[in-house]
Image (cartoon, rainbow, N blue to C red):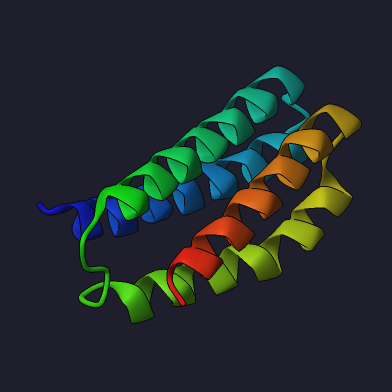
Length: 105
């Protein structure tokens, strides 16, 4: 696994955490939803770190961009289902998504 693949993998893990956040929010499990959202943020931070240390992201560029676009589309819908404490984390997530998208240009 090179840094490029690790970048993509962290984006995948962030996506899974966001889906878990949605499920927990629907189940009214606030604390767990916050924790899951924080995990998603952590995965995106790791992805950004790996992207910054990668010499060449071309092998994962298209797939990573697609996954980030999906996250970007999903976040506003998720915000409608979550509390303010989760919303603030999702706002930070949106910034990380933008940073990663810029890195992958």
